[in-house]
Length: 213
Figure 1 (cartoon, rainbow, N blue to C red):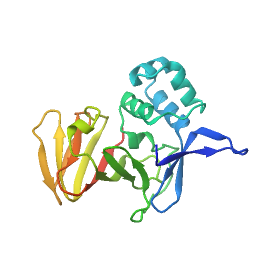
Figure 2 (figure 1 turned 180 degrees about the vertical axis):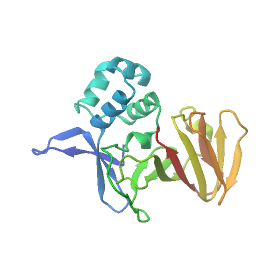
Figure 3 (figure 1 turned 60 degrees about the vertical axis):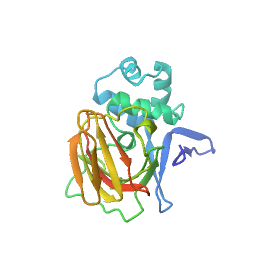
C-alpha cells in the first residue's frame, strides 16, 4: 500500500502491525493494526477460526496479523474489512477508551490521513478523535466503471454522501443508478451493495460520512 508504511522498532527492525497513515501535510498517524483487528474480532465474539472463515483467510495468517508477526497485503486488508463487515477506512480508524468531557477536533484542509485505493482516494477527517459514532472522510472518485470494482462494497452502518465537485453516479444493489452533481446528496443503508463512479472529465470529489456500528 503506497500510503502506509510499517513502523521500525528500536533496532530498526520492522514492526509489521504498526501502520503509519500518511497525511498530505507530511505528518503520520500510527495505527496498530494487530490491536485493531483483535478488538474488532472480540467485539463480535468470534474465535480466530470464525473470523478467518468470514474473511477468507487462513487461521494461521489471521493469527500472525493479530500478533503483529506479519504485515498484510492490500488484498488481505480488503478481505479483513469485508469479513468484519466494515469499510477499509473503518479498519484503520482505531477505537480507544471513551474520553471524558466535551470533545473537539479540527482538520485543516489537506491534513487528513490519506488512504488510496485503485477506485477511491480517501482523506480521513477527524482521525485523531477516538470512539467516534461517525467516520467522515473526503474522497476523490477515480473509478469510471463498475468493472473497476471487485464486486459491490458492503459494510455495516448507514452512509451519507455529498458531492463537492464534478459529477458522480451512485450505483446501488436495489435501485436504479442516480446521477449527482455538486450540491446533491444521498443517505443509504451501507449494508446494501453500493459503488460510486465519476462521470465528469476530472475525478469527482465527495464528502462521505459513515456511521460506526
